[in-house]
Image 1 (cartoon, rainbow, N blue to C red):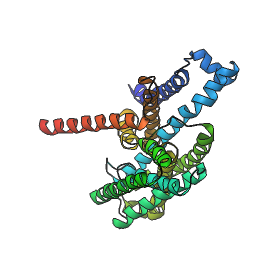
Image 2 (image 1 turned 90 degrees about the horizontal axis):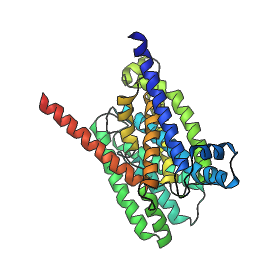
Image 3 (image 1 turned 135 degrees about the horizontal axis):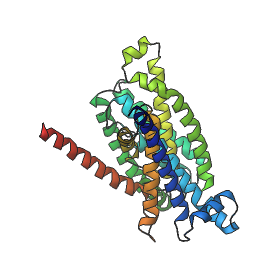
Image 4 (image 1 turned 180 degrees about the vertical axis):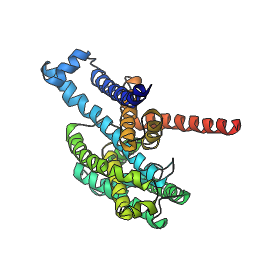
Length: 333
């Protein structure tokens, strides 16, 4: 029995990783021109026809990879916030950081007709960081308790109203672009957007992985972390900065994609071992967003819907089931 118990966590990681690869291959194969697994592989390796390589590498690969990377980024960001706030509802989309990042994008779009990706990413990051600073200032720097969560929800609601006002006040072209972006979509992602986003996310992911061990100590309490020699404020600030950056880059490219950051850590705690909460949430987030994007792109063909609409639907269903399950447990006591 003991060897089986030790191998079970590894087996779960292998199954989840294999499922993610399967979703990636399905995303590369599906479309107006359906490809076989052999054709997809030949397109990836460069052994297929020039047209097959173009379809796989240039048209489908950027979207498929960004869905995985963005899902992982949102899952990791959600795990960080839920650990720091010690609240199951603590995630960037709930406390308004997604909305703030989107506010930064809309302000730039209103000021600059055709901004570069670097400008969009910078404005998105600035919006997220300013929102985080406002929420932390209003809660006196405290991340625990309901005060932080309720303050974040309130700030997010105000910024949501500001975003609507900005969309109404801009010209038609900008408003149309912003409205599509607001739904959260990966429809038009190309290498020109995906490459810098993937590079920044990879660097941020490495920093987050280095800080993950410190996050486990922080969950034990600030006093114990301080007693162990940790600079608590600096560490929390670095973790918050990483989480906001992961969220901001995703928002700059795809818009505010909701519920992935909220649901991924919960599902990860159920499906995967808890020894690596950030890595587990990142893997589950990648699975959620890549699967949701496949549904958005192909389940209603020939019509494509924003991936944000799929994640909101799935997230709403997940929250409803979770609440019903808790009520059932409460009634059973």
